[in-house]
Image (cartoon, rainbow, N blue to C red; front, side, top):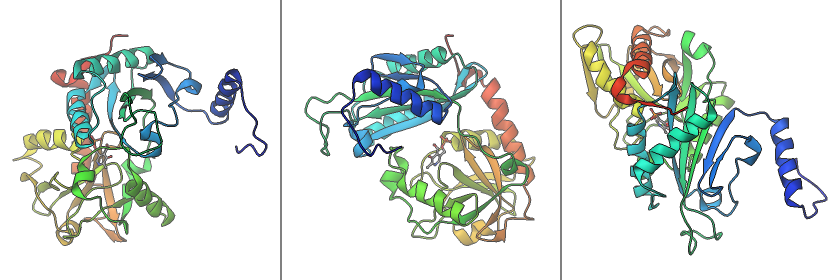
Length: 327
Ligand SMILES: Cc1ncc(COP(=O)(O)O)c(C=O)c1O
């Protein structure tokens, strides 16, 4: 709420106002580590960042998200690989060694007490000015949030999603492969779809090849039974897609005739038997309509379900990809 007659506040009044804000709008944030606060807080009112951190006012930050499944963290190394790569592409120094980041992530998860949820973590450029390059003496920030995860309607899984080709341009490859805090095109794409009464959008590149969705990858099962995924050179390399592509090779000779990663022209994609949305938050869901035209028979197909089940099993059983949370 905007205060029309603002006055200068004392520190305890600020905390009180932050608490009121959280009471008005309850959130499912369970624990937050901040290198700037110097530890972990569990009160959402205290999960704050200095306004002059360049991640806030210039978008100079990177992030990633991993899942806590049944008390274990799934596939953290793959997510950390991408996180470290994104930091490098963004010219953001790592706040500490990778092992230390992993340890802080696990300890924050433990402090949340939650056995299922999401972990999102960020590296920020740090505070100190309102300019563009990091401020003199700025230390990169490291933050870890344990939260309830993004929730999607059941209908997306039972009936499938309806999507549109977005009118917003796809990010140039460098920005698409970097998981930075600049999500404006992705946000605009989702809002545009919502305004059209649809569930999400799809980016298409200048060459007419399929890109990705707002915070998910897309893949197709061709009429020939081949699972096809766009190349990862102009889209985010989804950890879920990469893992599923590996797992799906086990279905070749059965439900699938092959697995391919290559450029996929839109005209070819529209003729697919199934179109899939894939990501850590959605896992796997079927797209049943794209730009007003049905995909396949217009109903969720068997591969969407089979891949979702493969992934769900992997998230619980892939011992080499699960890290214990030290509760
Ligand atoms: C733009 C974009 N593409 C794809 C994905 C899927 O990636 P992941 O499977 O690692 O969640 C995400 C999610 O982080 C994303 O933001």
